[in-house]
Length: 451
Image 1 (cartoon, rainbow, N blue to C red):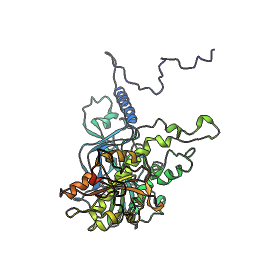
Image 2: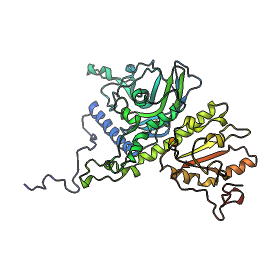
Image 3: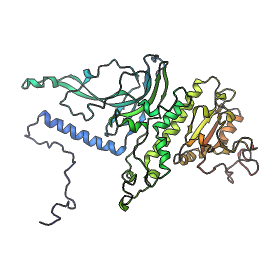
Image 4: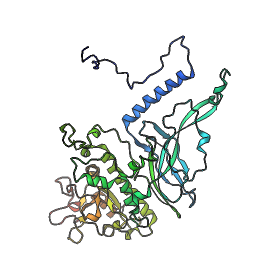
């Protein structure tokens, strides 16, 4: 027998892993099993499309405290309508804004679907449902229940329990506890707790260790959320928010610490690290530089900072006195800081960045340089490829003023004054361009930022 007899030939169909649909033809006897097989095939086809799109939140599903219903001993969150895709490729759609109680009184067993209906996420991994004080991850996951009754012919009395009219594929919310041992070194009473916990979810330690030996050290899994997947967080769950619950009620709800936009599969992920340093076929391809996950996480870092900053602004009676280092150990590669004015609350240019190395440095005789606001999109796009700034390492950040914003503010228009900061790893973009700059809102030699 030829050695090629068992080798797949060109254009020869590969049946293994193929989707098997029922072949319908006139005269065929159909049973409920046949129709269930067709449902399974449809679900499998949809799931493969979902896997190609990637897992995460497509839009909506923002979670926040429900101000009308929230109580100290019975917190309630308001989740906006939206769509997500889980790691199993299933789409999870919430069609209307929904209030979700974090203490459970609903008996999930009452809504269990009939066993004769296919459900590849039943049961979900075990997790904490009735919560108390602690740190939790709110997730959305698939749920299945029955609706109505269908008439039967009575030929098979054993199937009476399955005579429901329809099976409803819906969603459910779950509350999963983070292992407190994984952040025991963080002081919950510290004003930096929220920021440091968020970056523990981002896996900042693993990202930093990756820079020491990127040729061999590029772990595919890192951070608190990946660790939670080893226990309670299943591939059917999509994380929506990080919830810190104390005896005084909800301390904060941080969505972007765990929420991610859709992350498509990475073609380089199979070469993420060098498993055998002596095998040339397994040399590292430096996938960390191109891996889509890094970009998605950096985007989340920027959004998490803006949400945290907005919460500080709303909670403080005197935000102009707040100092960033009191609340932030890590800064994202790009951020916008609203400044106070006569009519609007905001932070102080000089006070907010106290203790943070910035360029130009305070006291250098140079004011904060101008940039063209039309460059903000390009600046953010560059910054997303950079890493966050650890303010304890005394690395500097660039700080800029969009000249259009400054001009409008000086002319009395009701605009929010603002500063923009970016990672010091980026090149300086505060340069005057011929026929693109104004003399009174440009950075000229010897008078950087001077109007």
